[in-house]
Length: 278
View (cartoon, rainbow, N blue to C red):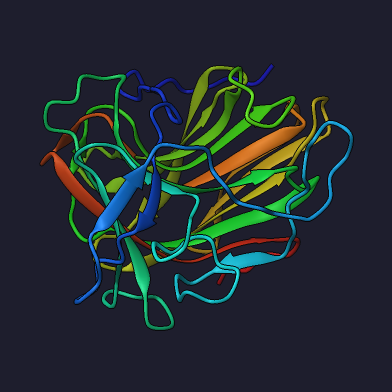
């Protein structure tokens, strides 16, 4: 049996409740204000599914937040992105990793009582690939102290689409080292264990986060996290996903930060059968 290093400060709260779809709201100069509508994620994915209604994700998939045709992760489209009260999601022209735009995900935990969270994220959903690399470039401009959960990637699963009984699978989050610097931690929700990694996350610099997930309900699964191109956690010979339908969230979620307000920037998000990392 695998042993887990528990981090009592990491609290996994509600990661998908009270979602709101973001329509419009490209907050670059001259753009209209955001309009918030309650509703489900409308990411179309593939055009065909099986008799369960599960639509397979089309891979490779990517977004650089450049409003390319078919890109559902920009605020100018009916998108699979949402914000909670006090949070915001906008496009920016600086900092960017490539192209002309990146996404700014801003949260504010003032007044939040954990396990509730301030959150703003985008997601892909459908029949996840049997095995794939999930990656994104992140830019954290300022150091913060995390007293709860500060989440960047989140995987959920269910047996059928939009199942209210969907459950968490894996989280990649930020935590503080003894010197206050940031590093990654992984929360294994199938076994309720937090695994501390040594993946250092720099301030004021782009860093690539990538998860290789081989989905399996038996002992043939694999979960590997790379930070800046370096493997910092490699789990094999274990169940990694007990569901048929899944969701992958990218963005910013926090339950208790000091200072309370935090923005992370994200660019060049991909799901692929080969690694896109440095």
